[in-house]
Length: 239
Image (tube, rainbow, N blue to C red; front, top):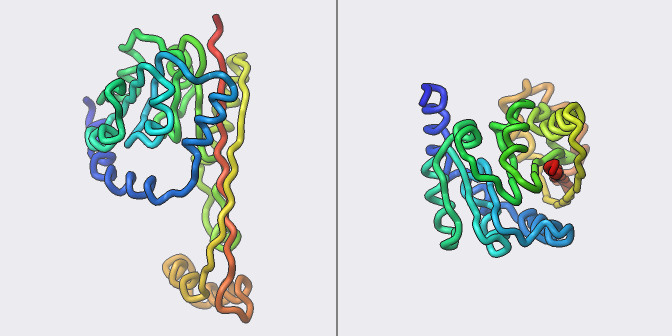
């Protein structure tokens, strides 16, 4: 394994517990909503299922009962340790890099799935993902993550544009695809004091005072609406 991949593995091992805590804190029912949609589209149940870069197994509890053979691949042993606690006997956890797995594995799956995959970047990555399936491919990402109070003053996350890149690749490769959006809205009360503390290291005091006044006016609290949109891109392998 190269130095880069060793460092990447170490990073995800160290981040695994915090990553899982973030997943557990999320109240978004995306896993169940995805399952319901896949059943409605008759993509589930299926016999073989690949969860690529599956991390701590966020989608295992929702999907494993609809699959006879579930395989999850990830580079991090710590991530897989956490995923193991959610897994039934028919779930196989594989510690391997995405590139090595897709290059060496000869098995083809009914459904190949990946959610929020940081290693799926290029057209060649997408083609390798495509060739792992004998039927359907599923790519799930967050495409919008915005709120009313903080987002106007924060830099956009470039990962939110990855699904647009995938769709461009698929178009160039003449692979027809479908898409489905899952949208979630929440509300939270934010105080002026919290807002100022949040941006204290980002803006100079005078600039922050102007931003705070513009945002809060003469009020001490504001209701902050947040919107998170997931998009599923799904496409069938040519027979």
